[in-house]
Length: 133
Image (cartoon, rainbow, N blue to C red; front, side, top):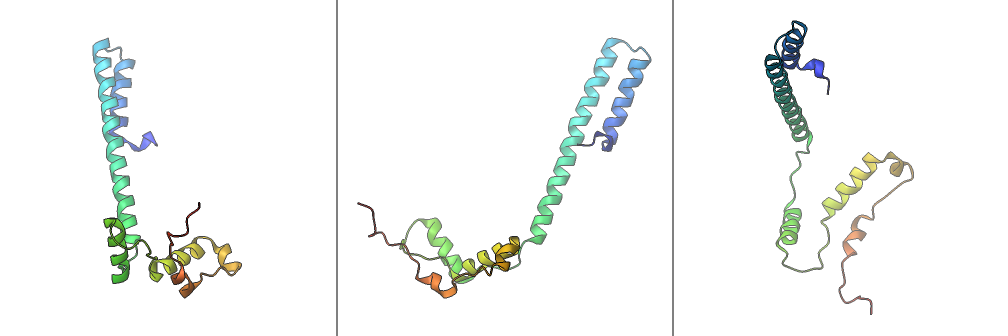
């Protein structure tokens, strides 16, 4: 962190260094030093809170405006409830979105003609009868 961008801290340190330079008594120096450290801590916390809020606002404004389809909502509700058929497949919208995000994040996949299997992925299900003996 750049401490030169903490104006209240700079002012408090200025008071402390002036007191030291002018030969103020030890108690006064200790008091001014403690005040400067307290001001620094307060300003750092405020700056971090501001930066965190800016980042959160940035993330919230950049998130997709797309809402989940009814099929996606049903799928996630069933998974989080822990009840239902274990042979559930991911909704096709989610699979397509994952592949789109992969090719966007990794352009090499687009160059090598990386493709999802589209509707073929619907055939992939879990089969609990296929266990190792």
